[in-house]
Image (cartoon, rainbow, N blue to C red; front, side, top):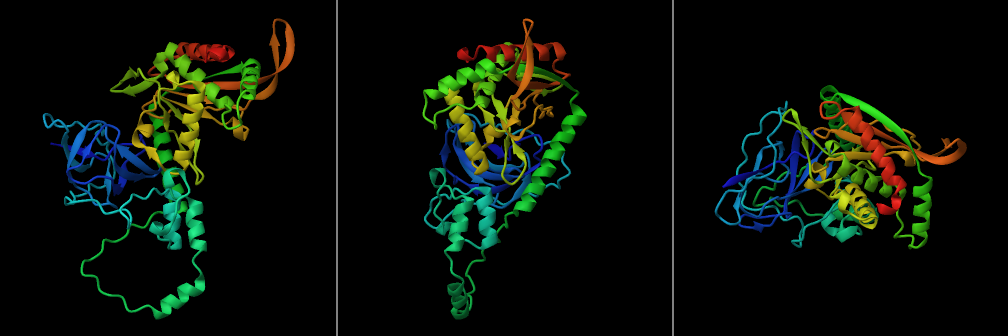
Length: 413
């Protein structure tokens, strides 16, 4: 028998709150199944398992906030031969007071009156609490029936004030329940959520600046040929199937990493640990403020169409609070593109334990001299933030050179 522990979903995470169990004792799970939802400063995440296993005992009640590494459930291997080793990391030193062990619970609280699990975005959950809307009565219009902010507002608008007033006047005295109900956990307001995320980001970036000796490189890239190729390619497609320029940047970055693997990895145990798989963390802004960088898995192996679909799906699920834990922990390098809001150069801070961050600015028309001729061309500035403990400027310069070459050979991406 082994423990399934509160996982660390990033270097800035110290605690997590159990929102909902998706299992009961005796359930058999396969790799990739969802065991629980956990709320962090960056939203509610679906926690998946990384081995086939059987749930023996649930140790935490929904609404319990515990430090990273705290046992959440007792489990054993599905083969009944060896105990499961969970992939939850050891807890980092934290100022959070130790939480006393919770009593085992027999089963999870049913998430809705009809027995079906409600899919609710964090914003919608908080808004429902503020407006007093029963989520069981709300019909979700999001992917998979997910309840979104506009669904809660629509449900709130359907409740007429006169009816509420009359009902309050004729309502009988409350009946004392036979069994004491569990106190409801009040979700944080939007302002509280944003403040919590800013604190989490500040903690992670402070650690990165203190621990990581950054070096920065930049290079201008002529985007004439890539954009001409992309325009011709998109002419053959429907509007929905067209590819955005950022997808070319993601694929070119991934392919460049196959030739410069030193930038694709982690600094752990005082050494560089290069990763075989290339999972690019793509920075996505949240509507309530802050950034999340979930991973696009195996970006080097995906076609441009697959990358476009993966990016669109990731943005939608990030903003509706439906990310999986592996998408927050698997990124081997981060890519951030701020050109759509007018930024020309991006000098980012590396997210530990990664060792590099690639930034792209806005494509702008600039004078370009080549073979003695002066022209005006669309140019993008690519930047690299590198960890000097893991690599040096020579490696970084080689990466940017190959990145440029990949974009000039856009037909091969």
